[in-house]
Length: 108
Image (cartoon, one colour):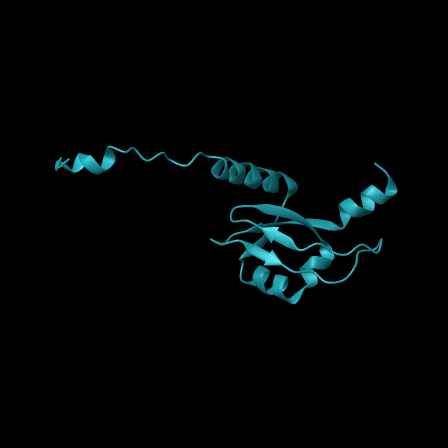
């Protein structure tokens, strides 16, 4: 691992969304390389890796205090994201056209 990769790895944390709705974190400014910061989207049951500076944003600090967002380990984040992907990738149930007729009233 290069020194730069170690620095990046040491300056990030994983956050998990504990609410029943997605959370969007708008970031303003630029990173150390001068790139614009991307907005962060945390889906329900999901986790994302963010820079430690993100924890200093007032809205993020409030959500952490309320326990709507929690810090998790990388292993916990991967487990959460795997569970989230399994739920999202489930096919929607197919409506059976005959379900409406199953009420015993067959007035066709």
